[in-house]
Amino acid sequence: MTTMTMNLNFWAENITEESKNEFMTAVEHSATVMMIQMVSENISKLEKRIKTLSDDIDENGDDDANTKTRKLDGLKADKSAYEADKSKLEKSETDTHKVYEKVVAAMTIKNADHFGNKKDVVETVLRVLATWNNRKLMKYAITPAFQSPALHEALETIHITSKAGEDGQLIMSKEVKDAYKKASQELETIIKTTFSLPFETVYTAKTRVKLTAEDKKQLHQLYVKSASNVFDVDDEKNIINFSKRKISTLVRSKKDKKTGDVKYDYSALGGTIADIVMRHYFA
Image (cartoon, rainbow, N blue to C red; front, side):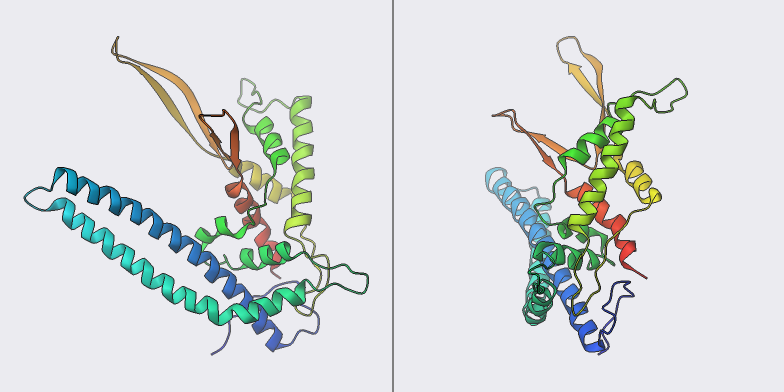
C-alpha cells in the first residue's frame, strides 16, 4: 500500500522514500493518539448523559411511549459505537508506536555540540501536521504547556479595551501601538520556540517558520469569535434589564467561585496560531 506523502518544504535534502514513509507513519500515529483523546472525551460525555437519564427514569419513571428509555438505548448504542472505534484506534496506535518512537528519537538526537531539537517541539510539529484533514484535532495538537499570557494581554488591549472613533475606526493610542508591537514580538517568540525545528535531522532540514504581515492580520481578525447580549431579570418588578455585551475571544477565562482566582484556557488561541503556521510547512 502506497503511503501518502506531504509536500513539505523542510524534508532533508537526501531523504529516502523509506525515511519519508517512516516520518508519515509518525504523523499518522500522532493523528491516532489525538483521535483516541477525542473519542475518549465523547465516551465520557455519553456516560454522564446515560447516568443522568438512568437516574431520572429510576426516580420519575417513563411515559407510555417509553420516550426516555428509547433515548437511553440510543445513547448506549452511541457509546458502544465509540468504544468500537476506540478499540480500532488503539490497535493502530500500537502498530505504529515503534516507528513513531524511532522518528522522534532521531529528530531529537544531540549533535556534536550537544544541541538538538526539543522533544515537545518535534511532537507538536508532528501533531500539527496530523490535523491536515481533521480540524477538530487541532485543539489536541498543542502541548498542554502552551501558554501566552503576554500575547493574550496585548490582544485584549487591542481588541477589547481599546477605544474607537465616531466612524468606528480603532484609535491608535500609544497603548494600542505598544500592544501591537508586543503582540508581534510574542507571536514571533511562540513560533520560534513551539513550531520551528532549529536543527537538521535524518528526516528534516532545519526550518524556521516566518509569519507574514497577512498572517498576523488574520490572527487579529480571528481573536474575537462572537458577541452576545446578557440580560438581568428583576422578578419582583417583572422587569428585564440589559446587563452587558459579552465578547467571546480565542482565550477562555474561568473564575474559581471559592478562591476568586481566574484561570485561562489558551488552547483555542494556540490552535489558531498552529492553523496559521501549518501552510508554512508546505512547499
